[in-house]
Length: 262
Image (cartoon, rainbow, N blue to C red; front, side):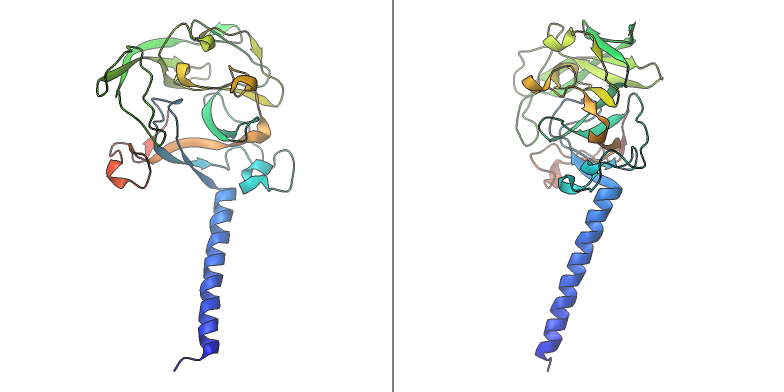
């Protein structure tokens, strides 16, 4: 017959196992990779609503925001490595504290402007080549169940929602698709921004559906993002779900497992 002390020892061993597992998981999340779920369409077509990915937290070193609840006990960055133009980066919004994911366009000292939807980087237009249309179903998407915006609006539910697609190529040779919905939006024509030292300028690939560095924080934008707010770099989608939740496995997109990002 098992003793009471034996039962207590077994219970304590189970508790210790759970504690150790949580500590290891927390250490892994802090130092190496952080899971991230895409809740909005600001990075279409590279990232779709419902994509699930792991962010490489080693890419740029570590700041206090690298730890859960910003609990890392230091300022600045350690083991720092500079991000590259064109990287897809997860960062902490300087105003709201929410995690955002956008593409890095402007480095410290750069000038960035948008004219008629085209980036003018350090006085030079960033080339864009027409590449057909991005087509998706006009249907509710993700946990928020919002309809996508369409260049060919109005579109009936279940119809083809179109956006003009272009391939944009940055000066360092990084190329990726960008989408257009309108040419008359406030973010299609901006003043010239000069990126301060130690900060960065980000934009979404779905250009007319992204609150990013083109807009000030006072209206919900991102503004310039300090280096210590960068969390890590995204390179691959692990899997993707079309439904309201990642746990609805029957809605997983079979063609996006371990999809590389441009």
